Amino acid sequence: MALCETSTTTTLLSNCRDQARQQQKVVAIIQARMASSRLPGKVLAEIAGRPMLWHVVERVRSAALVDLVVVATSRDPIDDAIASFCAANGIPCFRGHATDVLDRFYRAAQHHGA
Image 1 (tube, rainbow, N blue to C red):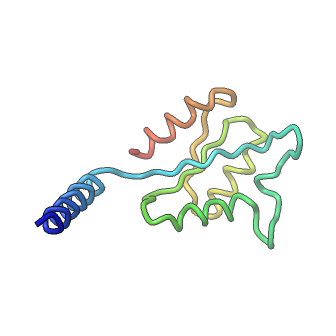
Image 2 (cartoon, rainbow, N blue to C red):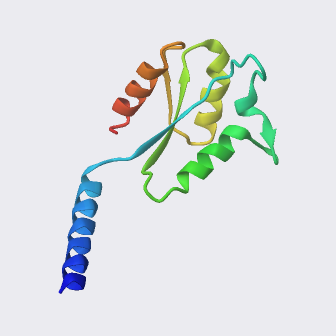
């Protein structure tokens, strides 16, 4: 009987999780900035013929539970290259405050319905 109860409980939990999942949107937000004290521009540095940011986005997109991948960057002109890269590659990009990272993440999530 315990095996049956465990099986039923597991099925019930799985069904609840699936229902909750249908109502929620999982948005992965990748922080990317061109400014870096040690290696400026590293997010667009090429690795195996593609920018590092492309590799990170593709890896995160492969996650089974992620519905949308968004790149969050600042409104600073130095980060225009990131926004251009995202636009050219069909990657949603959110631009926010340069120094308030929490606000940038919050607004990116809010903007994309997370």
